[in-house]
Length: 205
Image 1: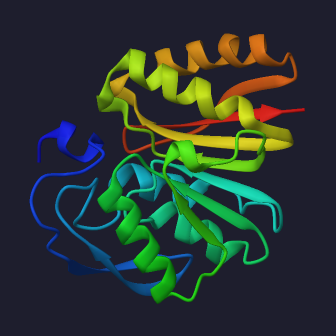
Image 2 (image 1 turned 135 degrees about the vertical axis):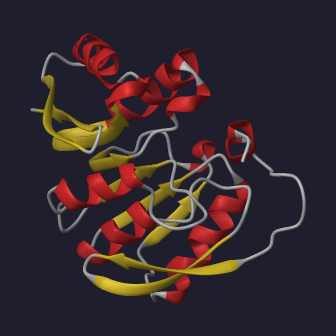
């Protein structure tokens, strides 16, 4: 599928739903996906690396999945922290529809699916998890991360999974100074590398 297709706000053509069998937080789950979104065939490798290694989110507060797709990251956060509110954000309208349907099918009433502009501006997040859309290009990616990562609350952590051969190391070098300009209490490190993916972590004191 053409990359720009799932980055668009409204993919072309009718939505043709299909189901996939996946595992979320140790549970076998039937999820609904469709063409015109990211990874419609299931959980992609990068997201799998993130979900295997990221620590459980805070049990309460505001949590964020940037680029939610059909929802594997946001749904996992919601399963692990049922008392928290999980914001599942995506520019793709079809992704939002499917993520909302999957949350409802799992009985997860703590998931708020939203377009980026629908998230209240003052809101800060105790955890941010993301498999960011690297292929949108460096300028757009930097704009995206500059908009969301500084909204990490004090004491919070943001986790990103990025393919090594798609610029994970250069992104890490950029993230540190960018976040430090916003708040010197930010730090960035790389706790894990697996199967060609880097896990990057940003912390805010």
